[in-house]
Image (cartoon, rainbow, N blue to C red; front, side):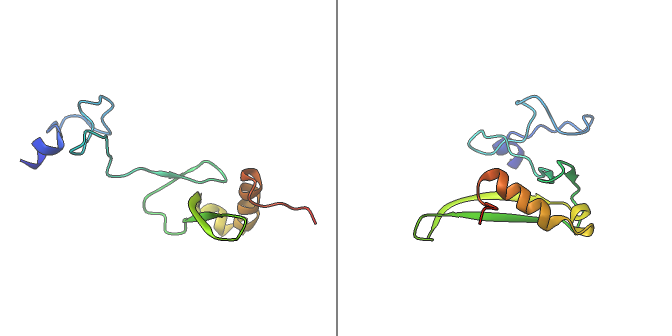
Length: 106
């Protein structure tokens, strides 16, 4: 009954994610949803495995001219590889500068 509502096919011989929209996991509205979407490191573009416990994800909020949060944010993910090398602060500064959120002028 739940499989009919979500339109999930019961095909056991097909490994990996389905590429055909008819075979993809869909919710009641017909939108394609996956159970797991892997993250990528914002600094190195490496995939962050699901079992990596050293990775962090940061949401940096946008503020207006009065310093109030506008409801918008940028998401950055940093892999444990970068954090263990002690380069996460430099990488985050570079990413924020690329988005225009940080300036280095005096």
